[in-house]
Image (cartoon, rainbow, N blue to C red; front, side, top):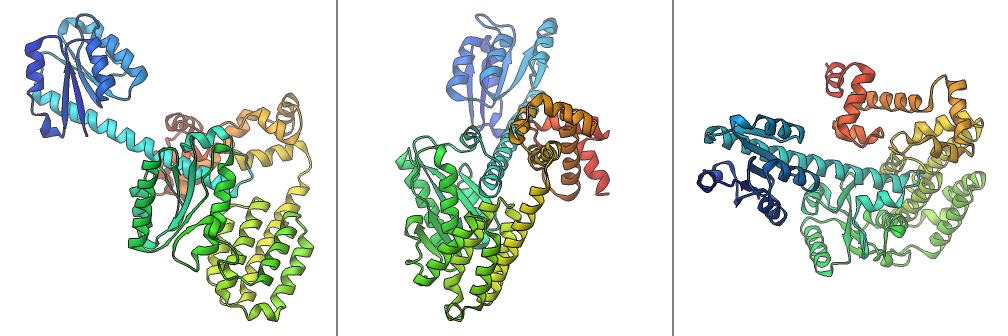
Length: 481
């Protein structure tokens, strides 16, 4: 709904403005006020996207009103001004008014400008929603697959978790994208056709309505829903997400339907007791990082004739749980998980399934050995920066704390061994990452800014141009021909 507020002290002019054909540009509601003070009250009450206001008015002029609104509302302001109010017009420019139009007002000028102002507001809302959705997706991937510790403040900023919530995972084939549009404020895409929906349990009526929407959608289109347990606050979000994700992966290959996570057990899936014992033993070896014993155990399982008699669909949940454990304990990337998961879907026998797990264990072991060779403080710092440059709060102190040295000592190491200040190295690493993303992906500039540690796309663009001599858009056009 488009809402317009007109603030004008002269009744004749105000009435004339109210009678313009606002419906022709899609305005649904027009409210008026006779001075700045009344304008503030009406703006607080009706939240207009665009305000058309006179400047020179009693009680509170248009400039003073606009300064108040800029601090507490997201809207575009168009000033109406006389020739003798040029100083006022300069003030309007300072507070970033959308436009100022000279009196007497020409409707052929005013109507198109008001429509342009509405479009700008709507584009800004869409951009902010897109950026917020991307941040949520990035956060969830970090929680599922990254070794980076995610601050509670970041989790609370991405999802409203006060008063309790439930994590719900779903897949619905080719119609999955429709699900995201049905519940845009709470749904995040995890991978192809899989979605996380976080529903607040505080408002039971709203919670029930959204859950019903989700269930109805899945009944109509087919697919799987796994509903996690109710959790209390952000402190438990990470663990709740991991548990629900694991149960979802266990069941989605085999059974469509709607399930409570707590009901998805080995017994419920028909997994024989000996398989449950195998899973328990493998999980223990994974947590203890006993690679040699783990490889030996997998080889024995591949040769176990008794297991080969078990239907592969009963083995799938076990293999999924083991893969998930390796990814989580080994802090491997989400790409490693999806690669292993897709390979598992193609498996035709138990030997193939355990081969997928064996390859994943080798990858984990290789990376662990590589990490152990990184011994010097500066190499550890470089490795940390290279893995975490997307963190906008990647301070020298944070890196120093991670490698257990003082930040003045680390600062000197960068100057002596790298020949650059710490901030210069981080900046260059982010710019190189931006080069790669602009060249190899279709991500928006806002998304690339977030992925390279900037919380403001305009600042990112400014830094990129300073570094490369081209704006991000110009660079992308150049490299892609």
